[in-house]
Image (cartoon, rainbow, N blue to C red; front, top):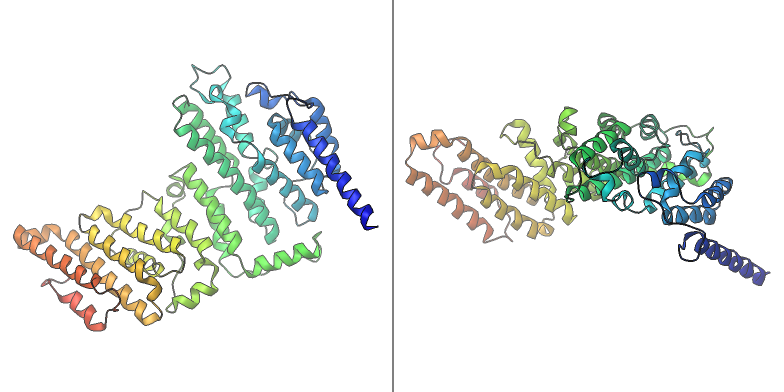
Length: 461
């Protein structure tokens, strides 16, 4: 019996390999290279293969058949759009094993496709005068190569808001793959001298119209960090394994949170002013930090690196944000300071980068701040207790206050003192920072903090 099983597996694999080579090898198979886009992507040169793939739709539950279809479409991408136009699979979100299988198949199809710029070619995306194809046709094909035509904006919006976590996760994965393809194409066109700005504008506009509204995604992120009642799965067509996976996602929402933020990052890369138009301040994405930050970082998903990295990347790319030393800004700065001690080096470095970036507009004194933050990063593993960390954070906060104070009060300062006195004051600040950095293994005491707030200052900072 064991030998029979081995022979069966061998026969299956042999048949699979033979069919795959027959359907993907242009030199000795039954497949043909596609014609020039966009028409070459809309009408396939492989009708026999299209018929074969459509006839296999009923067997997509078999992993080997599904893999075969994906490999053939990847080798002959002109099959994609005609194939999807003939599938009778349901993509409307619902908690069922069949729907999850359909979405997984769709994700595999788009993940395995060659890059869009390779399929479109220079002639399709060039300026109208240089292109022989109608611009609208090129835009439609480019859109369908990025965002699946079988998933409308309504379907995507319903999916990411679904109360069943495994359904929500699959739709977030679809959005992630789509945006990766969109951003990849736009990045490539940005460095292409032949690319027409009209094509880029029309394509970007078409993508935004096909995706959920950014406010919907912001609401999804908010709901994921809130406590909610688990969905009732009694009457759903889910396997026990899928139900268990749903329970795990309900207990730990790190993955859906991370995917939601990565999708928001894709929106930002696609259209930098998207959050400004939505009247949403990205600093609201930074989580509130409790007194015992270390325990909180271990238990709360919003403090895990998978969630914080895309959050901080969103803030880093937010060029339109201007930092003012007001009460609301001080809370934002202190949150970033707390994140300097995060166990993930990527999180700590992003927090440092954002702090320096936001203070760069305040004048040359930002260099002292950068030096201090680098030293903190270097020695952050030595911070073992909350009190030691609190002292370091308070010290940096005081220094930031002084740096900002000297900048914001610049006009008043110069009216009261000579330029020489001002330079003397700056020198005192530099010497103070150097003194702190020269003994990085000694944590500042309360007297250190008092001295920092008093040294070199006769005015109220």
